[in-house]
Length: 509
Image 1 (cartoon, rainbow, N blue to C red):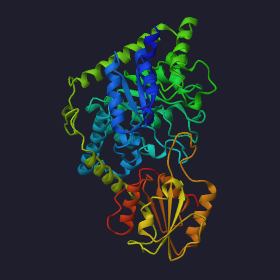
Image 2: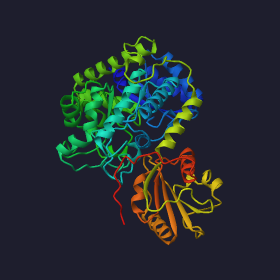
Image 3: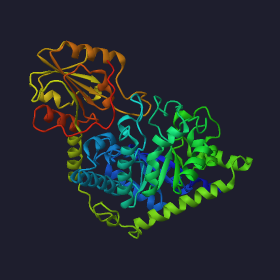
């Protein structure tokens, strides 16, 4: 039974450690023990690709190779293409404009093909969370919108694109992580909403996603008392009751990462997740210990062997499908999925073209949120203040275009126009997706004192709600250099603002 239990676990690969003989031997040991697959974090493209091909050749059963690449393979793997956040895609793409839809689908196919090129067959995307809380520390721009219909449409496009290439798409984080101020990496979020509201908002995108062929679902570590006080990942009501039976989902169900601190106060986590109806235990801290815990639960009778058998059947069925695609014998070819460009699996990937696609989406996403006075083109003598995450300051293109650039609190601004560039990001264990109250007060004061002011968000658009006094407010959704260059072109009058804000901002004066 031990080797079969390993088939229920997806372990971690640190891509940066590939090349270390000791580390590679550790991974190969897990492969020989029968581990179901790996989730990849980091590493260089060629090294990751080569090592994945090697461990697949050693494995008796095809391995799941997954990664969190909702922003493209470049989100995790060096030398692959980083794409904008999901919210940026929603800002850039008008679903009623056929040219926009074609561009969107071309971009998603590019992400899928890069994943295949790197050996990834399981994509932990799309994020189907409906971001209803402006202070959400871990979802924010990872969500498409605060509107469940918008999330549904964009999410299903991701799913169809990935499934068309034979990839396993994975909607997350069921039943919905969009309405919380707590990061489940840090502690257990409690979402106090009615069962009906949960169905109408958070769960709604999953209904169509299931119909459109979503292969797997990642269940979040979220306590929703209307369903169960246990984390959803450990809840029979959430997994077997709501997802499996009420929504009729027959595919693979994964936990979110078991290393997250939301589960720190619970015992027998692996067994409880499997009892709830989960098929895959994702990213446990210690794989061998997790197997021992499951074995002990079987021996003690707190976990039924039937649960293991059912999960193994789903794993085997899914692996049979990815093995068929790997041989080029999949039942469904890319051209069979309406609206998606046909392609040849394993064909050379044009990374330069993908980079251009990503830049085009980034540029189209830039949104003019509010404007009191027309200020375009902006005077190049304007003062620029950087605020927020300082990791983006040193290499900022703003420093080349505007001669007067400083950090918040460093120097007083001069000139008639003040531009405040706020950089934020979403990251596990960070605890916030915005800026602190002290910085907000400083920005508000500086913008109020200036004759004219422009506040730009490179990241969470929600920070803009605090600066209603500004002459212009601009959302760019990502703190990347490409997003900054796109905004500069808009400020210079070289390109129009094309984006449309996909969330509702309530000003806080």
